[in-house]
Image (tube, rainbow, N blue to C red; front, side, top):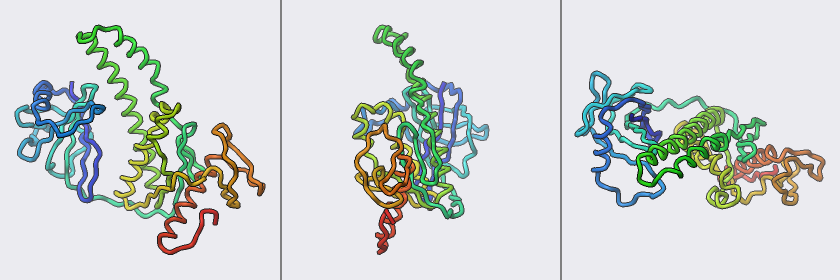
Length: 315
């Protein structure tokens, strides 16, 4: 069985239309052979288990029976998630570690820009709560990996008991890979939905410049990777460029948590278990909401200062 889907990439004037194709491709062996015979790239990450091969216009064609013809492979039966808006100029067939195949088509599209929004928002990302927006909305952390840990533990323990090089170990490895793929797919779909909503509803989005790689080397590494902050910010950036929105990052050393959004007083450092605090001015703050409000103010101030303005974050 081969699964094919379109990877979401975007360049000005060009977009890859999703061909989320989950189908039975009887030519699976031929596709795998074509991928193996393709010339290797100069550099390949050892952490990336995907294999891919790209065909230009002369190497593939769309048949009237809705099948995809690939040179030296034959016709592939696919299940389309949407119709292609125009004739594709190239297709990339990718195999992921779980054995699924995905087809990504590059097509020309007329990008429809949504109407301008009037609101702007600051976002404070976290672990207990994935995100708190400056308008008071919260996004609960789904913790996809944590929820799948029991099944993963069972599958990995079963794989460790199989002899290396045996067919049973290969089957067990595929079961583990499919569980990881399900977690990754669910997290990606969830991030796409929330990032689209934020970009659609706001003209400008401001986030904190988090050092995700540094946080991933601490005792919170598993939770940081499970949250997927980097992927979420990357989606916000890509969609902001696509839909004519503004996105900016606030300096990571900006004291968004310690700064009172009411009077501008900077208090002492606070441990993570302190979720609420009261400023000397009498204002009572929720830690995450106060940080989101300060991130919004700092982002707006930085934008005005870049244009010659004089506004400060505490104004």
